[in-house]
Image (cartoon, rainbow, N blue to C red; front, top):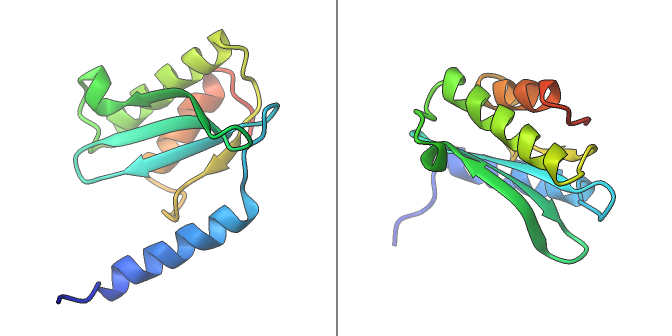
Length: 117
């Protein structure tokens, strides 16, 4: 049985550490960002009810999500959907990833679309 690499173990530790403090509520849901090599996904989640309020991905938008431009498009679309549903404030869950590059581009585009976090 293969062991997990040190890099994967460290990522999982960061995820757990972030989730200990970040939790979404009805008035301030959690914006979760998941990044893979080819795509980027973003969800707004209400943790009290366990519901996903809205979701956007580069796969669904048919844009390249492996670059900053694709992440910007996803953030812009997510912000527009959230504002249309009446969501203004969210808490940001970067999923253990560093806040730079595609994650930062998505967050900045969501802020420009009207989300506050």
